[in-house]
Image 1 (cartoon, one colour):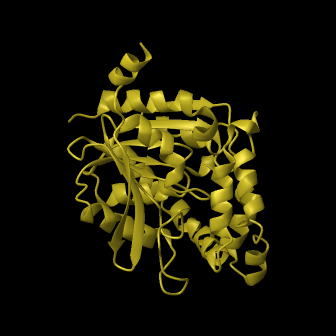
Image 2 (cartoon, rainbow, N blue to C red):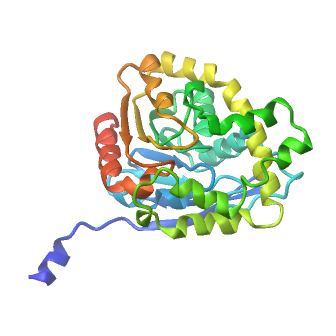
Length: 299
């Protein structure tokens, strides 16, 4: 009987681990599913990599073509040293845009988290006809979504002195990354230590802390463009699902609720967890993502 059950189990498509050279960046990405199926482009955020989407990839690959790259300065992507590549959100988007073109991703849903959100919004502004739907896991686009945790960062934006930069020196550290994974989580035993250990090792590499502080400074450019992103939402009315950890120390629930103003039919859901909601509530969130895609995407 057990042998028969194993034979009748659905076969999960394998995940491929690949690199794609985009100018001077060797982009690492995870790919699964039939490329003739609708594509879902998964864009991670800070203190993460494509690894954060591992369970989502497994759950979607039977029905969707899933692509999850590591952004420059994250994960396994090989990018130039500081000073040889412009570590700004505009340039990260250029690299990801070229990446999608080289992989011939002509239409795709974007699933975003944290830093992946402004990269996704910029892709959508540049190519509105390519974006079929949006899924946001604590990926913000509204000022009201920014918590007081951004106050020392705003001080750096307003006056980017060395002193204000040094005041943020504990941000790109293994200790801070671990805190971001565990803050707001009721049962921290649900958070795989692989997550913050992997990103802690990444942030400890020579030069990486300065690159992350450069990106943190440039995040102001995303906030400046929030009105543009919101105008895109209003004009194009993309199907949108927000799955939000409501105890996120950086991105508040009002940032998710604000989508209802611009996309009245947006599906907004909150979970009793922190910034990395998929780590603790994946069993609840992933079926919601699957249902959303099934309802809104056509072959």
